[in-house]
Image (cartoon, rainbow, N blue to C red; front, side):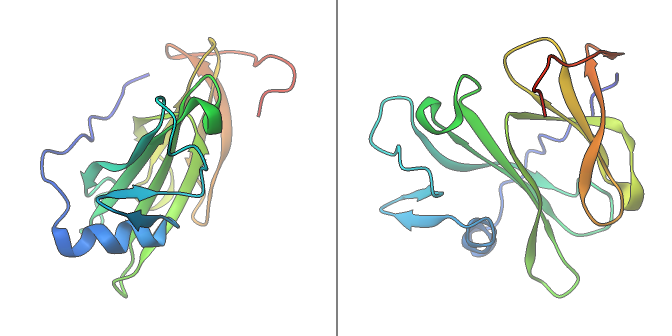
Length: 154
């Protein structure tokens, strides 16, 4: 397993930030962005934040990863993410959203989208691959080696 470094240093322009959050279903309350997670008052809650902004799939348009934290909403993993891509018409589209910690691999599916491992507690994580329309489950891996997930896993 080779991990793709996508934590691109540039911040999303202010004019784009609201469009990114709105496309992911967030709403603004004060200075913070919130999804439909109803845990915004607890100590474990972390408001939505754009963690990654850059051209993840090398198509010349920006992509973004939003994260939000809450053990009440997202269990032991404590994090949910949304991967969004700016479309040719200028609108933002959610490519995938899951509970877990996204990790992009260097190997890629269609249209240049990197395979995506979704980490959390445990030792065998799902890896998703872009099929041209959606990210779908491709395999399970732990530290670059295929593994068999426990019963009831995704």
